[in-house]
Length: 91
Image (tube, rainbow, N blue to C red):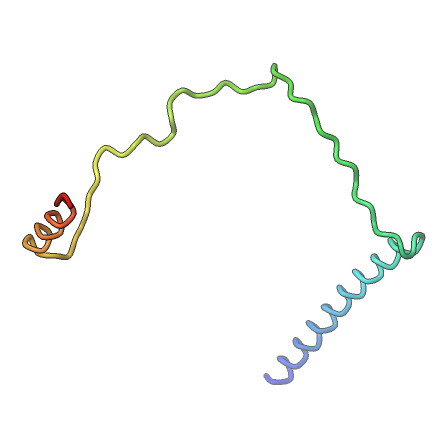
């Protein structure tokens, strides 16, 4: 069993090295004809906005506003009354 695990580890390492070697070779081939210069990105073409391509907007929102708020407090009624009195007192 340990020989099989060893063989699988060696095969995995060889496949990983082959993938890294392939990536290195591709980078080398890409940079070979222009050493020292950065690889240029493709130009980006910006399309002008066309008003005829606009989608119809929906007037109904996907999520409606909440109708009620539920608070679950782990305090007694006396503690809640004290908190409400504290924040509703005028200073």
